[in-house]
Length: 322
Image (cartoon, rainbow, N blue to C red; front, top):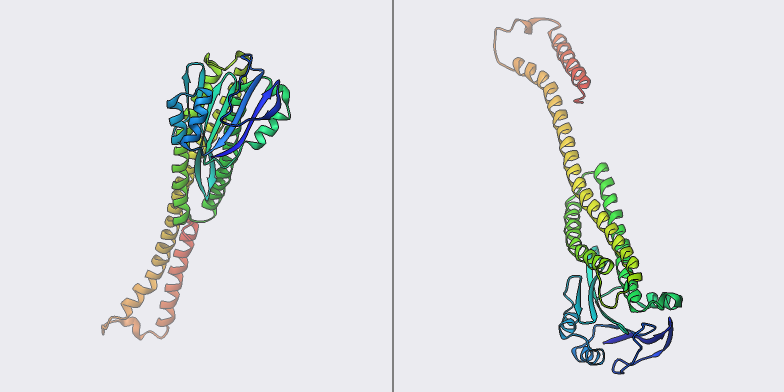
């Protein structure tokens, strides 16, 4: 396990560092609390935290598995909140998990496979002691808001890639690799929506329900998180529609270009059929062909061929087949 940070806070200010096996007695008015951040803990180390902070065994088990969808569980006077982090890794969405134990005088965040640490978040909160005085519920809001805000750059990066594909579909045929990428992105967005739905439910419960450790004045902050989740959901829904339209539009353009090429080939075939037919007639070995004896028959036939081909070319040009 890596203990990222473990500190005691009093009236919004950091007091001192604490050990995970240290028992801390804090008043019940939320003016003093412990914030512990750990990453990839072992079973033994989570057991120590379980004993010191009376964590529920089922919550500890879920925090160890790191395969949960976003959810919120109530265990007596404590909350257990699971959120999923997401980031782009070589063109696909990679997921992590942040499980948070929330009591009246402690908040413990357990991270698994997360690309972003909470160091910058902790520094930001410590720079504004008036915010930390709100207690653990505001820290929980800050963690969830930090996670949800991390979704937006990832979705915007996918959006830029999709817009590039859309322009490419207009300019050229989409190749096999581009079509495979469209279906890969669509599949990734569908999976991401399975995370966004539960994340919205977690934020909605924190914003609207009476829960332990969550004061009435902190609910507007969780409503802000819910708004951010809805914004990301709207972007993802729009991207899925754009991906579908890019594929369909590419197919329509390909059919249109194929039809144009087919018409051009048919027009040239019709034009070339004239000299082929006339030449074929004169290539037959018949004795009774009087025009063969005409002095200017050769030039007359060439003129007829040129005239017919020119007239057909004009008609096809006018019909926009050429």
